[in-house]
Length: 555
Image (tube, rainbow, N blue to C red):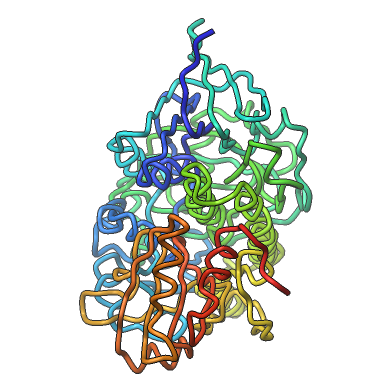
């Protein structure tokens, strides 16, 4: 049988699979992607793109394109809490619009010193951009309406059959590696017998149970609600709790409420579904349901393994979140970035297969960390129960609303002001990081202290009003030279060339950078993680061999 031959095959065309296709295609790796859906997502799904993800989009050259999507550029991205959307506002955590984010980021320091701020945009829009850029790469083939129906690791490759949905057409494919990014019900993971571990479904008053989702159009919402618009609208009352993200800022929303005991999606008509939405609004608004469905909140699950031979897993196929904090899709993008440069290095013969083993070693602990943070956010909001008289037109009602508002404002800050989650993930124990053994600060969601010790994201500064430090980094490896040292770093250049490593040398004389990075020579990976820093290049060959996985770092 004749096979189509590729370096990498990807199952799944969501954020993980499409981002991985972009990472591989930019590096000239031949890649084929299959997804059984007819196209990218129609439903809004994830709605928060974190700052670190936006930095990756900037590295690939389309952050501005993403930031222009979703809501109007002056639309507030606040998180607002109400009894019902048209009744009482309880609390509001204010965040900048897209226009304000572009302006504010240039002046921010400390925890939020970054090349990009977060952007509130539905995943459906992001996927379209990722797909467009992946399809523009000559070595990438994107195929929606196809699924991988069988596969086998044959030792030196993976063979598979791709079947067209709704027909009997099949394709035989042979690839060096197969990547399963095919979602929470991953066919790849289940066939491999790899199981999830962790919290399989906590039960809470909210964010813990079967959730009913509506994607709907209701322009009248902005006419009847007497409060300032917000990106995320949370309803807190004893009758029906909900959260709802603005999709386009004009009248499209992603509405989610938890089904009560005795309620079943199959028994809810569209008219009844609209009534549920109207109950939360507190006004009989007119609306058009664009789609509907259910999902389960309360998960904090991570797969027991991310790899089996030549087959790797990423995204929802290896970690399943309750979407408090919006961490699932962003963790998936980081998975793709981590795996992408490593796959390309091995495929091109610049690194041994051991480099790929570090994908699970680095990313699984981060998945456990991030699902834990999301679970804590869900518990904070889900276990806080509205008191019966919170909507009463009385002094008691006013007191209860004031009390709930104080709690919810603090919760909103803790769930959405999370530089520690966004920038603080570390790979200190990775065998391809030359760690320094220093004690690290506590890993807290709301705290990030820029740290140039090997194992974490390179600290960021603005070099001028338009240029981020990250803009100076190479697409592959970067040697940052900050001040005179015992050697000019030329041995790194030589060692990198001998190893086939694409190394960009960046010279910057900046007192602020010297204070943060502490050492004059800093070796930065393609994913902008610091692999080594020091004052000399005498051990350049050994360092290069270590960071490429030829020899493990000494501990």
